[in-house]
Amino acid sequence: MNRLPLVAVLCLGMGCKPAASDIDQPGGGLVVERSTPMTDADGILSLEIQLQEGDRSFEVTGFGDPYMTLEALYDPNGELVLWWEDWWSSDEKLTNSFYPRGPMAFNWPIRDVDGALEPGVWTVELGNIDGDLNYIRAENEVEVFVHVREDSDDEGSRVDVQVVYAGGIGADPDVVEAVESAVDGWEDIWAGVGIDLRVTYGDIALGGIVPEPNGGDDAYEAAADANGDDVLTLVVGELIGDTTLYGQSGNIPGTVAAGPTSVVAVSWLEHAGTNAVFDDDEVRVLSETMAHEVGHYLGLFHPVNGDYDQWDALEDTTRCSAEAFCEQELGSNNMFPFPLWTGTEYQLQDDLTADQVAVMLRHVAAQ
Image 1 (tube, rainbow, N blue to C red):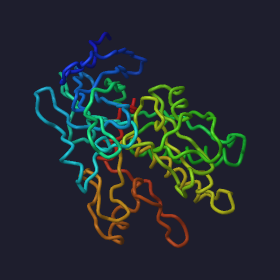
Image 2: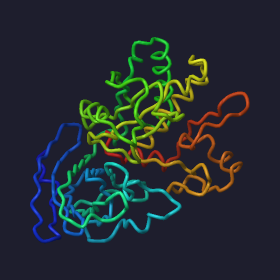
Image 3: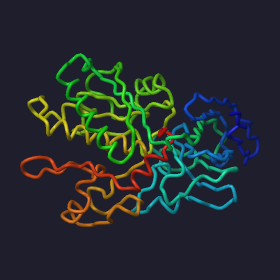
Image 4: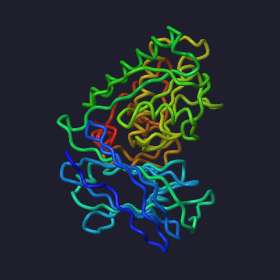
């Protein structure tokens, strides 16, 4: 299939330079275009994205110095679909694209209620933001990737992930056995909602204590680049930085473009406990953590946060505001913010709602 170029850059300021651009179609229905346009004098970049009949979703990734954020989205009729001010202080979470935190990734559509993509020209406005949350009011060159996922026969129900071991952990048969058993459990969680998980294994050139994904690292970018745009990267380390985290996603959503935050990481030692030996319950929790963190990468937020005062923007997850009620209503959900200890074992957390599954399957990583 031959396509017209995906992206045109609207020059909104004086002296705006045309963008360098290249386009690629690596197969599997994912079309990729990279460009290096200039923001205008107010720090704004406007992209026109040409979509065709059969395009299922698109993702815009912006690399700026230091940050790029989503300002607005307009549909082919010129109607405003998203505006950053409507979500900046909202108690519902839709996407982290509005906030300056490393490379910006914006996937659309996000939810089932957002509907299917209409063919035509969609306009995405991005802002170049400094560390004090001010616009950088100057013409700056930025790097932008646009990925467009075309419809496929299986309706985007497959996600490919490479699990990579850090610190030589891949040579430890006990840890490898636990990780592979956990992957089997993760496959079962997703199979129950119609997602086909396909996993391969490898290694990454990092010590056992791996950097936090949302802080970024060059080794993460190299691993993601080696995997290509159709395969997500999950790093298994001994620990994640100086934290006690079970796992962390590079962003919500994550990008399929290679970058320093283009990974998910999990800590095998935090799951194995003080004796560093896995029992069956700990392996199960590791499987739930893998599904949970990659769920973040595919665009899912916690249905309720740990303070019970923020929620995801989905219709079929209960909007609760008290600890006991939230645990009763959402404690079995795979995206609940933390494992729940019953006194004798961890509660099973393998549920996903229809709206949560819809978010994952609208990410361009879903093939």
